[in-house]
Length: 89
Ligand code: SF4
Image 1 (cartoon, rainbow, N blue to C red):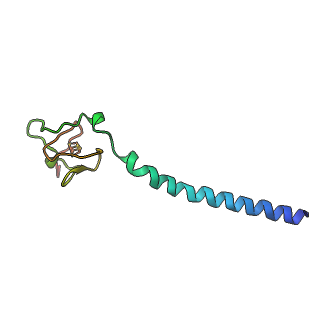
Image 2: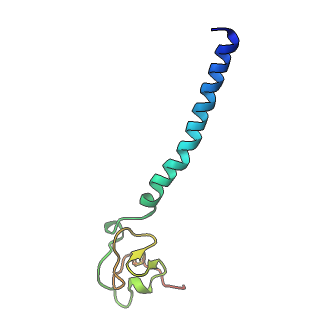
């Protein structure tokens, strides 16, 4: 191998390594974002019943019919958790 071919091989290797690294970051972000974005029901003391007059359906984070922007899993419109925030508030 000549000096020029060695240099070209090293350059190709560097380009491929950079491309792989650059490509892996968005894939990693896509693969972990949804799961990492939501909290567990246990961590926010979620319950299937209201807390006084506060319900998930009255919370700004509720997504009808049965989800939450912040808490993972099935969410009852009549549920509640400790990060409740008034809808429109
Ligand atoms: S109270 Fe709000 S934040 Fe908590 S689970 Fe219900 S919709 Fe989500």
